Length: 261
Image 1 (cartoon, rainbow, N blue to C red):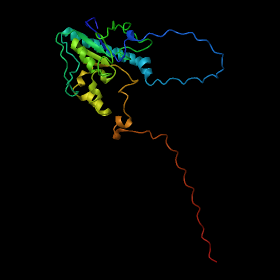
Image 2: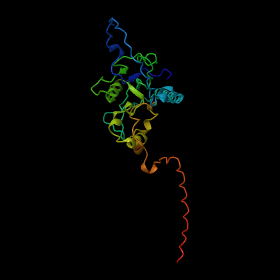
Image 3: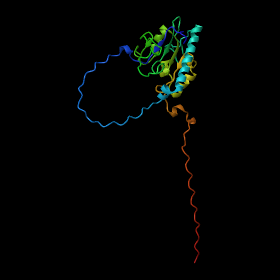
Image 4: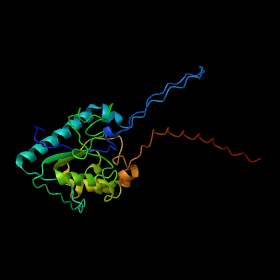
């Protein structure tokens, strides 16, 4: 982003920083027991990928991710260059139909990212923030974890802590709760969630401060059966292959009346 930001803030779903993980116990020597024959196990079934092909393997996901990052970078650069510094973190009294934003004042600009399988694809070791150019991650300064406050996995509290120190110009995530916990309470049902995103007071924020990354693997996006997603009068069911024609009925034999004696 052309070096325009003076701070980078990360809002993660991790639970414990890597430095705080317990050390492994020393390995103890074990005397081998006599060999026992065990029949070979059958080969394991291939893993069910459930959308992982798209997220981790497809060129389309790579293109969509790059497209979103480019939009985010351009948006932030415009905000910084124009001196706008308009925050995008909702105030505690906001609703999705009537949103308000925490003021920026003269706080330094920043962006908030959801990292796990969003800003970073967790291939291999997860201590990858520095390698991805998002470090150094300092817990409580640029790294905020689940459990840092009494809200558990809910993120509004952490976002408000961040917004008290920084002017949050943009946020990126793969779930609606990466932008506001109101998405867990206000929209009721699949159709209502979609309508809220598209037509409520926060509709103009998409691509304009709030940026969604692709994730077809898990989360609140994967909700709803056919009856919840498609109106009854719009549903169509495959009738299957055409049935063979019914055989023609056999012709009836004429009955010859018996002659009277």
